[in-house]
Image (tube, rainbow, N blue to C red; front, side):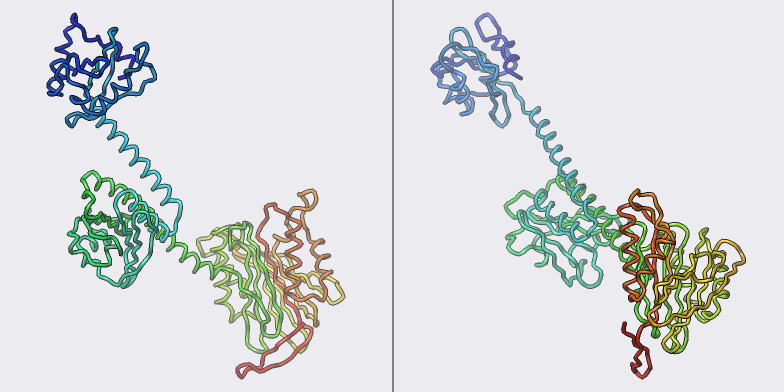
Length: 550
């Protein structure tokens, strides 16, 4: 009720039956003495007899309110005067002054207890809603399980209890526990304990059957459950952290002996928080498991690090079409062989990009590895690979080039076979760049494949460059729409005569990157096979192996 409304209430005078008004009314003179009271005021304040000082008959807040309102000069109550309220007899009252012409003030006391309870409940609900929203934001902002446990324990300690423990299901004999005191920082520890020794904890961690929050006797709590320096424990409640089909853990809330125990309403609120925390921890654990699986699979799909194999120098680089990806549709492999036998190089380009292309890349690489006993017969290998791809569920095809390299004396003999792939380029010692005379049909598209194999010999210092069309089809340049092209690649390689295999790979990748700038591009892969300039033999583990230096 504002002061405008207060003025609409009839002032107590002899002509108005205010004595029967439902609200308590006190009339106080300028000196602070009671002049009149109605029946409701007599029932509320039995000591408020006429002539009694207000300070002796009413609560201090009402006496102070009268002193504030009784200002010298004109008597109307300012519109900006603060609303006055306080407690009388365990109930909350609003006090509304009405200044009379004779200088006395009529105080109308309106019971506002029920309204205040509603407002308090609404404010509390708003606070809890804001807390749950903040908790959801903080918990879902990370997919790290340790961070989720830290946030869970810290937020619970700040808003639900004096201390909190976030406990994750054990991955062995040790139980991971994050402990946080109110105002403190979360601390991780591991305990070799049996959760079933704590009533309700084992069930909460197993998550089946679903269990409610469990109160336990503080005197039965094991030492590891009570934070160091916490003091006497008044109450402990264990709340499950439900996950996505699997238990995410348990939340333990502790209050000190001097604090109020958990109410039913607080327990329900704790379960609402636990549901959000459990969902976040479950998502973080699932992400970690998927990331671990992806990392294992990714290591198998990543191109190998190349070096000298069977006396022949190899170097390779791969750049996926998107910077955030690690694998794509381009690939290469080098399969070593015994002394005097040819090492097999495979470089290819699968139709498409991204994960699906990477999966087919892995299939091709594993199939070629299984066909290594047939490495001398490129046509046979391509035919069997083609059959394997046609019989799979993939609807993609690939281009491929196979190269068999063997050191004979100071030279490297190559067999090169292209299956729908750009022909390899031979860089001679004088800078001449030749295109290998090989070609054929791509694999995975038609039932019969054919290919033509070229035989090439590399003198010391010469090399063979295998590449995917992501290099030559890189679109950029000064105008941004010109292909890097075959001729530009050949001129670049001509300038690389005499360089090491690693240096040539780096140079080609650098030129392509400069040509592209920040524009989109396809996957790009380059492999260089080089004949070393000098040849030394050394015995390693009883086997004669070529070691070369440029």
